[in-house]
Length: 388
Ligand code: GCO
Ligand code: MN
Ligand code: MN
Image (spheres, rainbow, N blue to C red):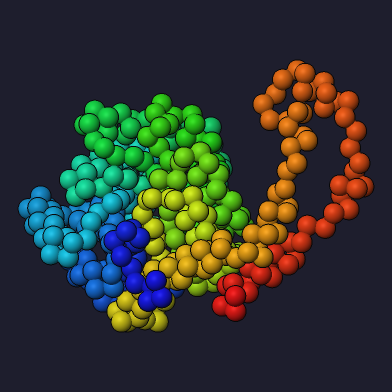
């Protein structure tokens, strides 16, 4: 483990758009020359990734002719078989083309909504052909700048109708494919619908086939909303809805930075990795991030290796934390249970409730107990800082 080398069982994946980012931003032109999907597959193989994910338009430019499309797919398949990389996930670009300027599934224009469904179905077919088992939906333009433009109840209904339609399509084709919905609070829209993973979980419960649909939470997106990412992931794990995950990093309160995993907040990244490993999350560890605009492609490789290496270092730290006797001693103490409350709590019964209403509690005595969380956290910090 000490070399922290990525292996296929770690399921480290990157999107074509991540290592393929040319450094273009709203203020400046690209700083790196564009690489073809085939070159990017080879770059990912060189750094030791397991898989590559793609948006339809990353692989096949939107104006391609059928012949161009066929050639691109043939070349991409050859690159996959030459390198052994797999395609665990595919997704649709429903945000780049001007047709989606006011949303895709939630657009007010029925032609835009229909075109969005068509675009997704076409790429679902390709994703499945390339082996994808998860299909991600990130509604980059599903939102508003002015709420004069759309009614949020109507938008929710439109979103539901689209996801239901596409679930039925997948069933009809007998594809082995699950959907993972990705929330983001804002950017590029002023405000986006289903802004957080929690919103998505609530929305999924209203679908026709909720069992087919889970979430794809992203570190940066929950941090943009000022939320604790591990808490969101924990809720998704509890609901058996963690179908995919987008790992990156982000300073709170900033724009969508998409930094290398673990670059900003190593402690939050540590608790995230610990959660994923403790609960044996077995999906892709997908890095939805990109290298600084300052980098050339050697820097892009450092970036990609760094994402995976930091994950593996934190995985080792999590195992160390779990095996630390002093840490575990504090946890055992704070979780101690003498069983005296089980006659009142757990599954409800009228007898338990009546008995509980009669019980007296010594509030000051219970509240006076120190919980030792200062020591627990300092020990955690020392594990992270490598002195434990
Ligand atoms: C973003 C999103 C995207 C999606 C991608 C996959 O902030 O731009 O995170 O990178 O993850 O479109 O659907
Ligand atoms: Mn993002
Ligand atoms: Mn993402």
